[in-house]
Amino acid sequence: MFRKPAVGIALAVAFMGAAAQAQQTVTIVNQGGAPAEAQRVAVFEPFSRETGIRVVVDTYNQELARLRSQIETKNLIWDVVSLNPINEAAGCEEGLLEKIDWKSMVDPRPFAAVGGFGECGAPYLISPGVMVYDADRISADRAPKSWTDFWDVAKFPGKRGLLYQPDQMLEVALIADGVLPPDVPKALTAPGGVDRAFRKLAEIKPHVRWWRSGDESMQLIMTGEVEMGYGWQGRVNAANAANKRNLKIVWPAGYVNAIIYLGVMKGTPRKADAIKLIQYNLAANTLARYAEIMGLPPANADTYPLLSESKRADLPGQYLDRGMMQGGQLYINFWLDNGDAIRQRFATFVAQ
Image 1 (tube, rainbow, N blue to C red):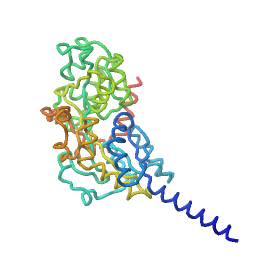
Image 2 (cartoon, rainbow, N blue to C red):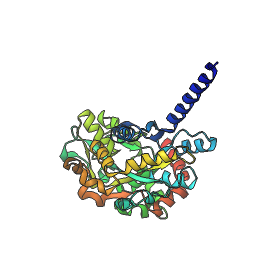
Image 3 (tube, rainbow, N blue to C red):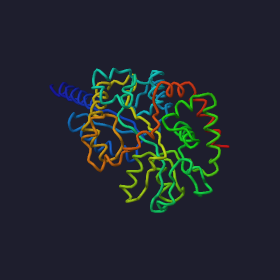
Image 4 (cartoon, rainbow, N blue to C red):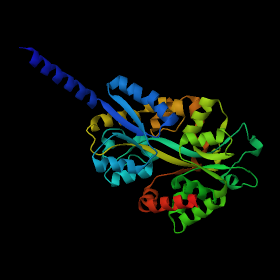
């Protein structure tokens, strides 16, 4: 006569156990590849060991539409989202992300140099977009030294690899057209700035192979399909380490600094655990572990003293003034107001 209640109790215990397990799982989405693998080793696995919260990883390519669809259908798959500066601002404005007072949870002072916290997102990395070439194929005396060289297909023949994305590429085009990197936001947002960038891109367009992922950007260079290309520093470091290659970054030419944020999806029932994961990710010792693998500049200034001398040598160092920052209200508001039209124009431009 006690079997039926025993079964009921067993089912209840199993249900509560499954519910507890579900509550202790957080899903984060990033762009995959080598940076995601470094995050797994440096961040997610230690976080899980220390907290008991399991981290599930998904990938996307900064498609804001995939965030919108989850919110609109109320079918949340992700809890934590990796975001570029434009998507952090747009996602926050559209109500796709939770508004969080990060300054009440994390000391804001070490993050001041990168612009501090967003209304929704917390900065954790800087991802420089740089000019890169294979030094085993191009000797130092023949190597490009500026974006003007990159555009000079007569002096430096061969294909170029560029990102299939207007933000970053319009900025690089303006640098190639003579704008100093720190002045690019002002030049881009000025009347005629976008037209000027597109005109410059048109000069090199017949010689471009457009890439859509970080892995593809490195494959194009390593296989010799392009002579030189635009790529993200972390991908360059990872390609050199994994494949024993000699890909070189041309820091003096100028580069685009994309701040990478972490945000929490609006309405996630795992908000508390999502915040815990982001706080853990922002810690100086966590970012130091990550930087030792990927060599990317951390957003937390307290991380730098913890880095090995070799990793500090991988950073821009003396060329900090050659970086163009994807940040500031002028720049972000410009992309929020004009981004959709520019992206459509860019897609048409590439397809023509």
